[in-house]
Image: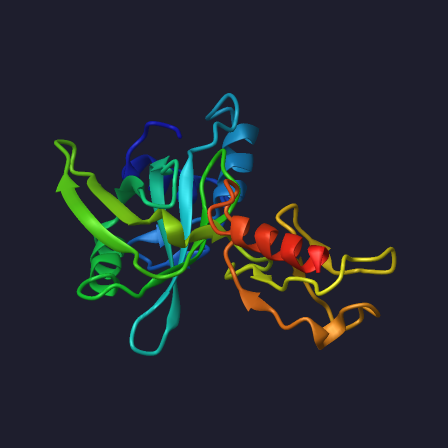
Length: 230
């Protein structure tokens, strides 16, 4: 953001008591909250406007214990396939540690999943397994490039909540009435809630992805049409 080296930042911390305290890291390699740093740099005319540095945020569920891991990819480039038979691809710049951990998580058989992928200009995505790292390369300036891919057929919309996850759809047995308080989707699926007098727990949630292009939701629409016809 400021085009200065580590020594300048160390000097600012020593000379100015209002410099934000580290939010993590170590004494040698401290990490700072970006919003707090931007506010401080603006206040001291170190930057003109807070230019956002695009980054992808990845929540990955994997490992032997199905733990949750969080990663960051700077300057992300996301290419989504036009149909379910294609492959989605995400590339960006990563730290060595994150790249190593991601590569280790996705090595071997498919099965790791993206609980939530947030990138600039797109709705949060989720991927049900089959995520893998296909490329790691070092640039001339020392940055580490990383590319991940997954089949488009397992891509969907991330569920609500900080950890992301699946959107669980249930196909209503009857058309939702005015009293229905379940979350509804254009594809015909609903996410039933227990307080709904019409559906409640009677409509068992079905694990379905809700891609914006309707890759899987065409099935839900067809099922709703058949139910209505009956």
